[in-house]
Image 1: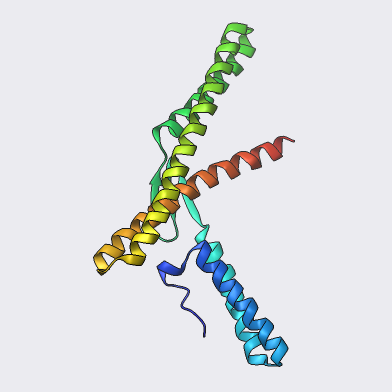
Image 2: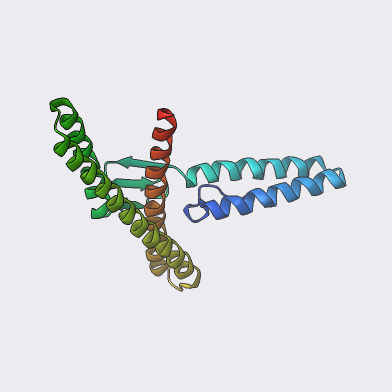
Length: 183
């Protein structure tokens, strides 16, 4: 009754969740029926689901490029890249302005930093929206495709959308962790 966890199409958050629920149900039925075999198989399915869920959230991010364990890749939008750069330069101007006592340079740095935050947020919203659309479109397209080539094209669309979503999640998580370290 165990499923193959190496199948790329099953390494998704939803797939892992469904497998975990099925494992819990099977284990519960085994406990009610007194079947050690069903309890063990249910617990195994739940453990496999946890591994699949973890794999589903695994990303590698180098600069503006994000890759997922399933093979999806994403390059951050230009707005995200420029917004991040503007924040860095704005912070530098604030620092230098403080060192040399220039309130004008500090103010200019604050403005550039704030504009960078806004631009990066707009880029994240754009990447997130496009990523969700690609994930949904890819999943639906793969489900109704009649040829293996078409299914592969839609699977790739899904995986690239997932990489876009994970990229935004990764960046937001890093910001939260940085804020927690400051507190």
